[in-house]
Length: 295
View 1 (cartoon, rainbow, N blue to C red):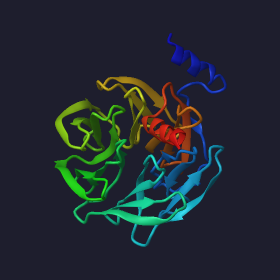
View 2 (cartoon, rainbow, N blue to C red):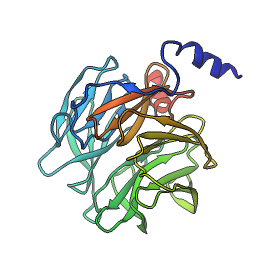
View 3 (cartoon, rainbow, N blue to C red):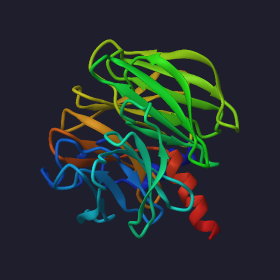
């Protein structure tokens, strides 16, 4: 047993690893709850706090409050932070990606009418963004890159219902899943955000796929809509662990806590957030923590 795992066990004696529990009260959020992103101060953000067109903030000790109301015509879904703690939000009714400052000032970062309904976001360490873009009615989807100047580029069309999306810790891979087709794809990725060599990483046989995040070891944590679980998958596509949840409809996940080993999952059928402990810190937590210590 390695030193990292021993430290993990010793710091989590009160809570069994991978055992999920409620973090916020049921019904605090609507069934449209999504987002799941933690800022550098440990606050968790999720959409649809109290009503649909909002973003809520939950402090590290579980106190929930309204962060912002969305602009008219905009509805938030996936959320990501960059190293400067600026929030990027997939606006699926506005066909945009919005940027929100830590003070709550909202601006349009990218406006792309050709988007179906941008769903989830991934971000590289150099701030290049990627957006999944499903067409739920048709069962199809697209994949977009959003460059640092807000310009968009369509990377692929005619995919399945693209949803969860993530960048590997070493920035050399982009992962995208398809909710209805139950597939997880992986692309090679370079520093310019260019993708190549698409191949199938894993094919599921039932349930649904939704949000997806990586830990610092490159393992993927994938929310399984309708299955009431999160699966931990190796970079090679092997399922390492199945984490049972209380709710049945997990939508997204991110990592935070003092050491980055606390998983937070948004739950649609409960309108709340569940939490569990993991072995390795989240990739995005590591990026934010590194930036915070540099300031």
